[in-house]
Length: 608
Ligand SMILES: C[S@@+](CC[C@H](N)C(=O)[O-])C[C@H]1O[C@@H](n2cnc3c(N)ncnc32)[C@H](O)[C@@H]1O
Image (cartoon, rainbow, N blue to C red; front, side, top):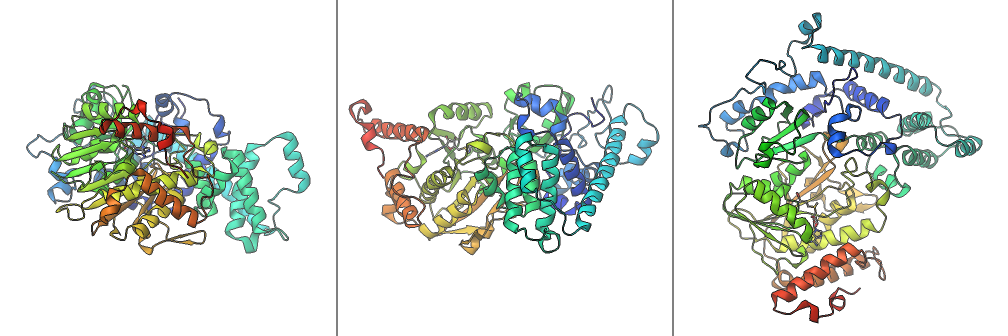
């Protein structure tokens, strides 16, 4: 094991922690990440998820000791907030239960290390022993990191002293590079230098060179270094300033922390934490914004196969996936629709927040995926849940009048590239037309399925694990235009950046700033998007009755008007989508008592 403490992962910081963190610390972390990633990341050997998570500390962000010890008290201090009535989930906690030690340290001191993070670091450093070796080694790492950062700063300073530094390669150099193949260390250095120039173009750009030339070079280097297609690199680059874009691309090379959600239907977070600590699991609460999440740093037992896991005390769930459910804010005894529910991470959270009262309709168009949905619902003991298998565009024709609807939409996955590196090369321009096309229809269905007169709700939450504007703000803006009977409201989430109100010349409804964006480099969570609507009046009768076909035709007409699709461009020629639609048609025929084998299903597919 190297000096870097094995298996430690960075904690997703809260907004406050994130803002408190000084620029220097950011630079420090960035430099560290950079130093680790000189090798081409796309060439990383494929390993199983667990191996990646537990055996490769190189890939994991370092825990910032100062930040953590500062945050530690408030993070573990559930009690203060609960007593003050601030715990948003306090109703889920049983006060009659005996309290356990909040430090998450095994109460049986024997054979167990002292608390993970000491409050008294300087004393500890005086005498190095087995107990403080880990922290001492971290100190050394920090010092080395600072030195490395200083060296890098010097290099950049040196380059920026000469305002006309030749950062861009000449034609001959380009030719040489083509012959000899990429030198990734050089590519990386050049990316940083080009970013510097773009940030102060007037003073630093070489004479006669245009901004476009620098951006083109940077995009080529991003493709070379990180392994994206030029199309996707540019699309993602355009979301950020040049330096933030590099941070985003770098964060996509690092796995997000392993996080679990306590199933409050069967246990409490403190009890679960204590039990897992006793089994040798090293963990911390995720952050003050969630009272049910725990981040696992390392574990001596397989975290997806402990008796507690099998008994449904927790679910392995990305921290970002908590957010749409928190925004949905389900209430006891409501009727809630989860339109695209498999494998059920959010359904089971909704059910837990409702304390198994009311009814959750968990729908997914993919029958195979409903198996994992059912398995999770069973394992976590959700007894208020009904599973169904429709194309969600058929709602509310199937059933409507819900108090709340969650649409966690199928998406391109540009927020979860760290989990699925294939996204870097598989996504095409067509995806960013076809996927939003489906999302728009689904969102209208979600809106039409809600009862505007619900005594407690009337709420729709739309979420994706994509950072693309086409799948997020543009879809929300479309829904606002098509359904004036809904308005955007605050998500109520403590973290997140406001959605874009304009993007590359396109203006959206100003209220779109109420939506929230999440980025891996900003919060150490998956890239995510959350929008919350309140339905203020009923949808017109005929609209509510419209099925998948009608909605698709309406969306097609709009897309053609916008010049987004023409001819057969947006046809659902994707086999997967076609199969889903065929299954849905068969399902409906069966329901009407018609044998689907006697009908030509192909003919029933929507035509364009
Ligand atoms: C992002 S995943 C949902 C994840 C889920 N909410 C969770 O938290 O576990 C999107 C889901 O949408 C489903 N889907 C795709 N097209 C659909 C459609 N037309 N109607 C309903 N579900 C659809 C996919 O099968 C997939 O399971």
